[in-house]
Length: 111
Image (cartoon, rainbow, N blue to C red; front, side, top):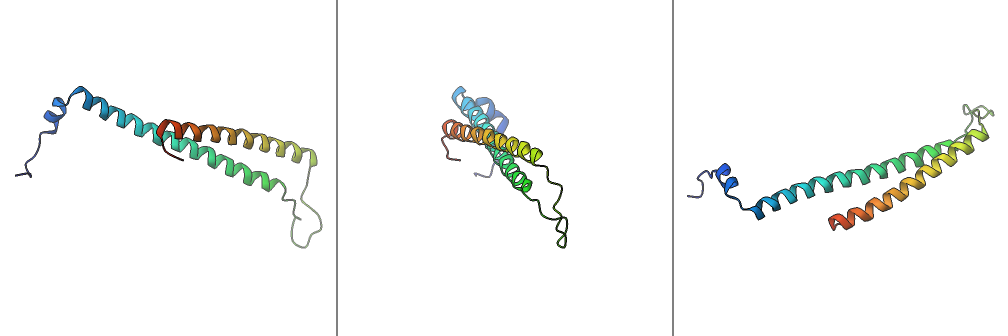
């Protein structure tokens, strides 16, 4: 009957070189793809968070709804921080573009 237990250890020892290489290649490929995909997703997340923070810089609303006094706004600090965010986001977008192209090339899948 087909319900008999098969000796996995013996079968493993009897595998030929091609089978062993194929198994190793699949394992290495799957791990690498997963790690690469996560790295690309991490870059995407960083970009989204930085864009939100950058948008938060322009929030200079009053201290409360009855107040005409705006929160302490420092133009020099605003400009410096906005430029820093812009450059960081630009660099991350370049990294993302490169990483996505490499992922698609290496794994033959669209991201």
